[in-house]
Image (cartoon, rainbow, N blue to C red; front, side, top):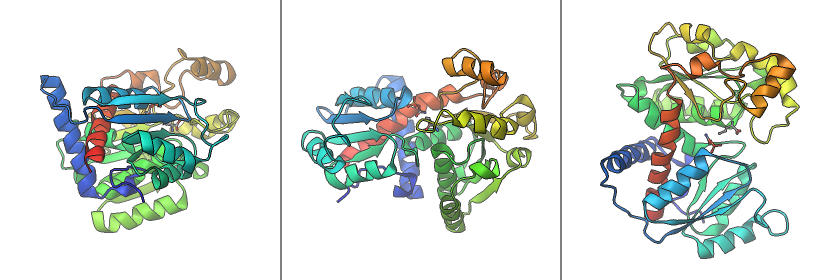
Length: 330
Ligand code: CP
Ligand code: NVA
């Protein structure tokens, strides 16, 4: 039996519960800023299991837990028996006997589902190859902070690798909340057909407008937010760069693409980390091999006043705190 406080994908939530988490996150953010946050997780114990690396998600879980009085144990990408010499269900049962909640980041969605099926405590998906639900809560909080609302009036276009976890999650989130949600991606990197079908089905009741297009300029026309993500995700083969660079260069977020929105105040979103210049190992490699200066977004856009990526990053903390507080109270 899965604990009702779990969050494995956006579809675990309906619109009311999704927006309640965002509203709680906004309250928690205000309370922290005002220095009046009350601890509601005193002496709870939370396991953080990472098969893949992380900066924001790990730090958000750790700081959120600490702010609320809970303790965390971090299990690094190579630091457990899980999957190697101990099954995922056995690991889940052990962790469930010791911890009040478990965060998992990794490859297969099936792993986080097996953890939730066997742990008996809330399990939270901190990113899999399929979904990134805690990211979506932060993104919706960020969009509502930069848009007068209501949420149904928000339009957002994801441009780039439309097949990846973040694009899928955004498509489902927009469809669930009744937004104008668009994916602009090459045919080879469209979201999976079943995800698009689910989004279209959700749109029938939520009133969402769902567009999947190969035309980046059509995708961004009139939108409030342009969103992109890395061209090669964690878990993808590095050889994919040779395929993705030619395929995705027309989908790079440049000043010209931002102008194609037709709006002077469209904001730029990115879940981060981003390749926007040559200052990283991968950025330098992409320059040497392909002559690129940055990949999915130019530094001009990334570093412009339209870019609200660090608001997004900060909001990972407040929204993950809302997930912990709600999940451990249920
Ligand atoms: N956006 C995000 O999940 O970042 P990390 O990989 O640093 O956790
Ligand atoms: N699509 C990216 C998101 C990172 C937060 C990845 O999975 O690597």
